[in-house]
Amino acid sequence: MEIFSSYNLIIEISIVLILSFIFNGIAKKTNVPAVLMLIILGIIIQYGIKAYGGDADQFGPILEILGIVGLIMIVLEAALELELKSEKLMPILKSMAVALVGLVASTFIAAVILKALIDGMTMQSAWLYATPLSILSSAIIIPSVSALKESKKEFHVYESTFSDILGIMLFYFLTGRLNPAEDSGVGGFLLNLILTIVISLVASYAIILIFQKIKSQVKLFLLIAVLLLLYALGKKMHLSSLIIILIFGLVIANMKLFFQGQLRQYLDFEKAKSIYHELHVITAETAFVVRTLFFVIFGITIVLSSLLSWKVTLISILILISIYGIRYGILRLFYGKDIFPQLFIAPRGLITVLLFYAIPAEAVIEGFEPGILLFVIIGTSLIMTGGMIRDKKLNPVAIEETIEEEESIEETEYFINNTTDLSDIEDNLPSNDH
Image 1 (tube, rainbow, N blue to C red):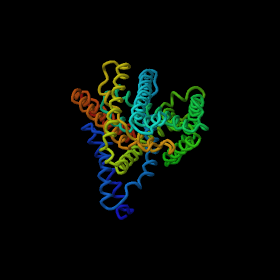
Image 2 (image 1 turned 30 degrees about the horizontal axis):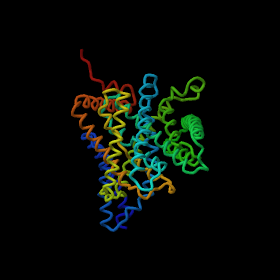
Image 3 (image 1 turned 90 degrees about the vertical axis):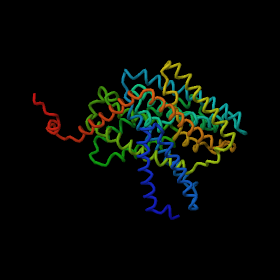
Image 4 (image 1 turned 60 degrees about the horizontal axis):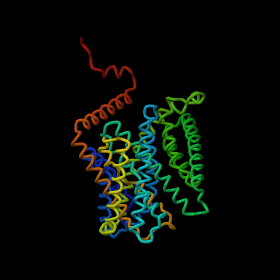
């Protein structure tokens, strides 16, 4: 087709990325998630493709690849943000507890709803379908909470990251149980988890020690290629591959903690720190591109007519009620009355879609409408938008101060990174005539 010719594709992708950047700016001002705007853009493009006689279904395989790469980049980006300090131990543990209890409780209730209302749905299949619907989307949450005060921002970064990791582990544990010959039970699963952690730590130390010695200026994409290779090989070996990415990010972001005693002598901290900073930038940029293309293509492939079914609406509303009912109870238990806007920040997104497409053929239920997926994703995003707007109206001063502080930090970092000599700094300091 003419619209998919080489130059047209370059133009189309470029315009989509430019619009995504604009959407991010709009999202910061309005608290409307950029993801919603990207999905709507994808739906508009879908109708444009159909008008030219094209087929939107051909994007399915691309969506899966983008989802996997996007998932890796998002988890790595989140891990690079996590500081492991003694004073942050309690916030991390509380966030993990909220993520775990919320995931299990939401999955159970959603599974009960699906089994009761969808013909042919067994409890085992219901758990498998309910798991993606119960995982928070760090792809949406992390960019959306930057204006919140630091303690709440940290909570959401930790919670959404743990929800991603634990949710994916639960999903693949459930898929493993579909085949009795391969099902190793809970004991085998825990052994697999311990093995994955050991391999992840060894690989992380090896990567950092090797890459600090590489003098080439083009080593960051080599590093990302190594991580993608480890992830894919881990999947082939039935390991919890995302833990490899998470642990590598934690190790390189907290090198002083992990390189102690005899190990410290092997670490060139300045070179390793330089790799960390450059990796942080390139990971954020790559995550932005992949996330943009993923949600636009998701918008291109969705079938809007499935939203018109009364059964889809009923099931989706019941799942939404269960999500926020459970979330309210957990947050009140762990954080008391200070649960706003955290209560509303529970969007579903990239991982929900990715895992839905990863459901094995033998577990597919014909009666499950993909519209439920879309309804829950859009519903949770709109509820988050409402909650963030409400919080912005109630706490405008705190949010403005947070934004100004972030801009000041960014300007200072830019100035320091682009100043090569101490005399340059002195020349830029204000003069003191007194």
